[in-house]
Length: 342
Image 1: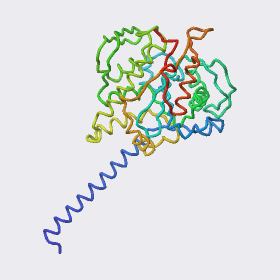
Image 2 (image 1 turned 90 degrees about the horizontal axis):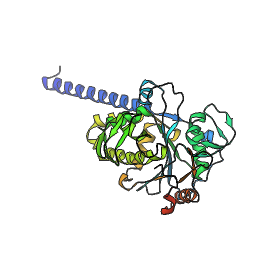
Image 3 (image 1 turned 45 degrees about the vertical axis):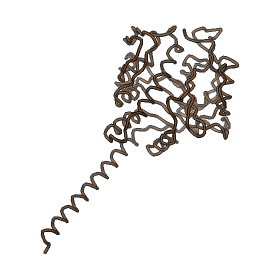
Image 4 (image 1 turned 30 degrees about the horizontal axis):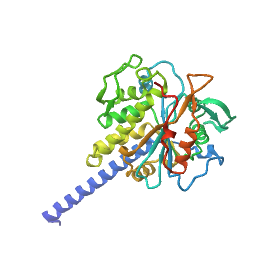
C-alpha cells in the first residue's frame, strides 16, 4: 500500500509527464503548421543543365520575387480589386551574399525591362521558344518561376542558388506581425491611385500602408517603375533592420506570429521548402548586417523604340554582373543608370 508521500510523488510525476507530452504535442503542432505553410516549386529539373557555372567565388545568389497575385480575397483587395487575372513579378531582385556572409548586395531589375528570354520550361512542363524584347514581369506571369530564373541567369551570367517569392497578403501580414516599419519618406507623396498620402520625414507604416509605399508609381518620380525602386530598396533595409532589432527569442508568442506570417505566403525552391532548411539558411545569414547591405538598380536606358520601356545600359550592366560573379568590388560607374525615372 502506497504511503501519502509516494502518492504525492506519483501525482507530481504524472503531472510533469502530462506537461511534457502536452508541450511536445504543442511544439510538434507549431512546427507542422509552420512547415506546412511553405510552398515549394521544383525549378532545378525545369532549368536543365544549360546554366551558368557555379564559381568558387560566387557565394550565394537568391532571386527574390514580389508577386502581385490577386489569388484569394485578401490579395485581391490589397491589389486594388478588379478583375486582374494571373500574377506578375511586381518586384524582381537578385540578392548576392559573398562567401563569409557578412554583407550583401541587392540588385533590383525594373519590371519594365526588355530583355531576351531564353528557351525555357513552363509550369506545365511545356517548352517555349526564346523571345527577344520580352518584358521581365511578363515572363513570370506567362511561364512561371523556373522561366524567370532561367531569364535572369541569361541576363546576368550568374547562377541562381535559391528562389523566394512572397505575395501581397504575406508582405502586409509580416509588417503587421512585427508591429510596423519606420521609414524616412524622402519627399511628399500624394498618390490618388492608391490613397497613399505622406509628408516627407519619418513615418511608422502598418502593413497596408507599407504595401502602398513600395508599390506607389504615381506618387513619386515620373510615374514609372524606376521612381519607386528606391523606395522598395529603402523599405527592404528598414524591414530587415526592424526584424533583426527585435528580441524574438525572448518572446515565443511574437516569434511564432512573425514566423507564421513570414511562411504562410512564401514560395521557395525545393532546397528551401521546409522549415528546417529555411531556418538553417536564415541562421547562416545571421552575420549579414542590413546596415552594410548595398542596394543598386540595374543600370538601364530608355528603349529607343518604346520610351515607356527600358533596356540594360552597357557597359554598366555587364560590369555590374561581372563584379558579382567574381565577388569583386563594384565600380561606381557600374551603378549609374542613364534612365532615372525622374
